[in-house]
Length: 375
Ligand SMILES: Nc1ncnc2c1ncn2[C@@H]1O[C@H](COP(=O)(O)OP(=O)(O)OP(=O)(O)O)[C@@H](O)[C@H]1O
Image 1 (tube, rainbow, N blue to C red):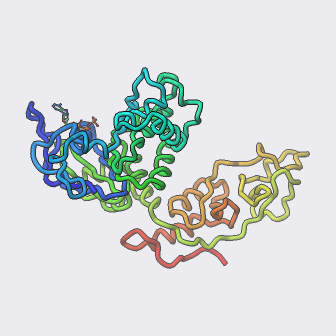
Image 2: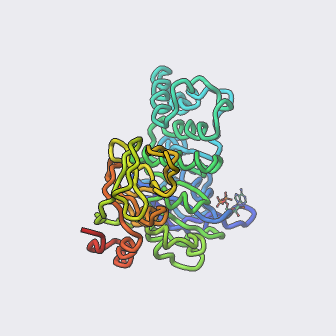
């Protein structure tokens, strides 16, 4: 656990970067600092490993006042990842990852074998080990940065905009893999970003700061979306927060309607169709897309990929209200496709049925007794 106890930082020129911050970052969880440029996120983060010393107040790491811990000892237990990864350009990827173990005096073989294991963990193939950072893409460099920070297995990780310098698709992948890794490792993580969507996706709790270094609100993502404390937080969290909050509310077990299907690569037969549409499934029963019978030209007798409307999303049974509603809204038929955990079709629901569930959410955002749906 990391605890900020009335922590302030005023730089010598008089700038108050952080103003009387009180906050707990619980062990094994991800706490995200988010806020507009200059609101004191980086300063707050760097005070944890004492790259910056607070002007007043105390930062506790478990039961130790960090001001009383020698910095080299403090930093041994704290991994640090920054934007652009900050890799050493003249060292190979493997030696970059092994930096801290070398510094800690590990035997070279053990350090390198640990580095190899970590590269694999962050999803980099073994042949990258002997490359230099400049020979990697931005996303690959960030993975190396994460592996390097994890090398000595520190219980705490500080991450300052680690995924900001890569394109949105790679960022999304890095975020997913980071969450998967954290699921395995359970580190105490403090993460800085200016991107509210990233904060909401990654944070177990999100601390919104305002310029002047004040904490505006700290809350779980769903609470932040459902109950912003003031106009600043509401504005920062964004306009479609009501819709996004549905992402944190389970749709429960949806009562689905049976949906007539047609087999991929099989013959087109329209006899079961209710409204001129059929849902194509593969040989495992996984939905592939919708087929509109009126799109067929004479002689097109086989269900092939290029005949399908594939824009619709598929929601998983037991998933969120947002994914269920999205499945309906994105479906060309208005019927949202619901699959089981292994991706096999269960049936469909309508937006009206999902809306009934949304209306029956309780105060905390949970859905009550499943209502609506079908037989
Ligand atoms: N060394 C310094 N001397 C004086 N002022 C500083 C110094 N470092 C940061 N500041 C100021 O402190 C405030 C907080 O800066 P900080 O870098 O912590 O903000 P941030 O929220 O991380 O910003 P960004 O998202 O733009 O990186 C800003 O007004 C900044 O200009």
